[in-house]
Image (cartoon, helix red, strand yellow):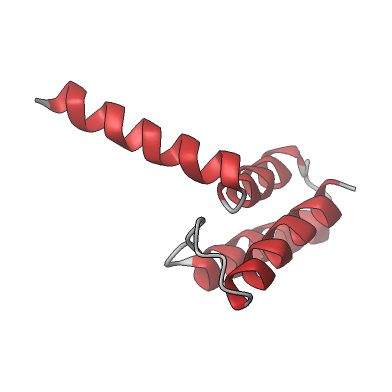
Length: 85
């Protein structure tokens, strides 16, 4: 269920961008990140390991592809830049 929702979030982002909605940017490393996360998931399944940590990473990445996640990320980066000064 969680992976299906993540798929739909990312697909929605890509579809929105294709229609001209540029409010939320596609992460620059989306392909590499998805490939790494899915490879990690595959490896954990093959080893019969706990999947929670990897699924949590996938859910967190998919959240960044939503409006709320994108703007939360921007705000976190902004706050981090203010703390460094």
